Length: 505
Image (cartoon, rainbow, N blue to C red; front, side):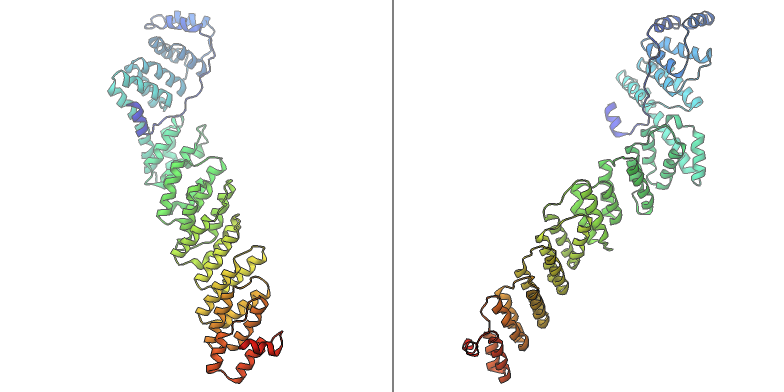
């Protein structure tokens, strides 16, 4: 049952300190004998203890308490005696050691008396080790009411802090109220976490509490769990600057964000379309499973920022990951298509390269084809030429066919001819035979005979037989003598007149 309770509710305690043993076990039997019953002869006891030459410091008294753990009455009487007669001032560790002895032996009246004293007079709380040991003992021995009350001690501490956080008008006033509580000695990761969780609806107040902890410069360690809890509280659009600051503090401290926190916050950011914040979170903890999902969200975001692509890729690769295949880019292309931004694929790829991604020829081919598909033919041509000059070998014949087809579909056959001529001239690509034929057919259809004539020598130079059928048919029906001579001139370039004339028939 206790294990179930611990899983359901976070405990409020701080880590127990080590228990140095400054004495041998020799004084323990003496102390057990002297304090086994009521102290009726204090002078005699003082005399015997004085002969032992003991020095009562927090560490030494704590050690003696643990030596007397098998004799709870003697332990309790000794503690009271050393406080009253020796004016000893116990620290939280001494109190908690005594509580462990009393609680595990079922001395509930004495246990709660000590709890009241340490809380009201000293402001101390029960630490984790004490809570676990005593709770298990209460539960095992059927002390249900005590078990319930012990849990209430923790909740009371949290409630007091939350009241102080809510009642202050500003940070300065909140700090003052927290100082008045005197809770520094009972602070623990669990207490802080519980306070932060209860203040989730008031992120500003939760931040006040965290700032107060930092200002006090306590020995209490702010763990990754504490940071992760605060991150969950601040992961809202209104507090995104504070979120970024705390995330940076974690990074500077060399701490890692807890996985469940990362998952919850990432889902919240993506669900609320806080893409920049999601990218920042990914930069802090680049999880492989989120790479493509986040890139797709960047692509489809209302305010598309290509720089975010670079940040995602860079942080992912800097973690030692790699992107070896083209599946990531395929997913990006599909996402761009779905939101009508396929024309941005070139910019996206450049951003990915800026982040450290190294595309292969297949990826570059997809970019060119993507630009063609959305009608950005000039960009496709320019991109293709730049990539080819960079040393990549793209599927040029197929790509050029897409580009020429695109221009012709838009009735820009003259542009199509210029592109083909330029690419052939710079040897960027060798056009396919069907590409030549398609271009000539479209040039003839629009009456651009001059350009069609100029394509024929290009075909011949590439080793293809000149495609003159549509030219002959057009000239026979609509052409002039000048057109026929033009065709003949194109055919005889580099060959004899009679060879060219023969080719016409």
